[in-house]
Length: 185
Image 1 (tube, helix red, strand yellow):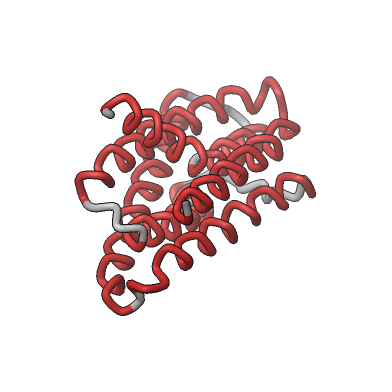
Image 2 (cartoon, rainbow, N blue to C red; image 1 turned 90 degrees about the vertical axis):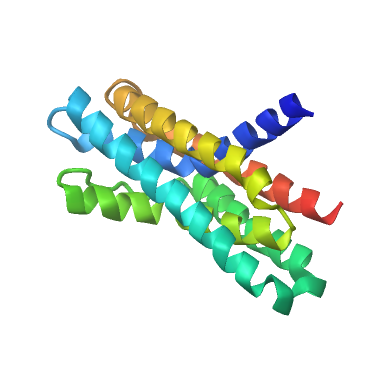
């Protein structure tokens, strides 16, 4: 049971941070210099924003759960289908937006842009009756996986270029759609 919870949380987190990886990978190519300090700033900001929006989405979904209890699992499914499908389609088209990560304002903008799916996923989790005890391991996993994905993305950006970004979005999109389908089962 504990291992299944941990694995589920990690898969959930990996699917949410795929776009963070893609953006950090592509954006690091445009940076003049990728330093440890820059990597830590960007990864920390992205992780705080991603986890914060996940928790905010869960709280918002929890508040409105009573109003939509009969259709909650369908709403959660549709939200994840939309977000996952959008990520998948964007990855297939290869039109991921490359964000400039110079300056704190751009880092925050990039963090919010890559975390909208976490907001929707958080809302869908609460509508699927995931309580705070079930959300906690997911939030921890999202934070850790986001930090790691941004660190790896920025480090690898100068080595591998933007060609890996779309693949990460496709995989993340498929995982989110799979989680959404799980809500209906």
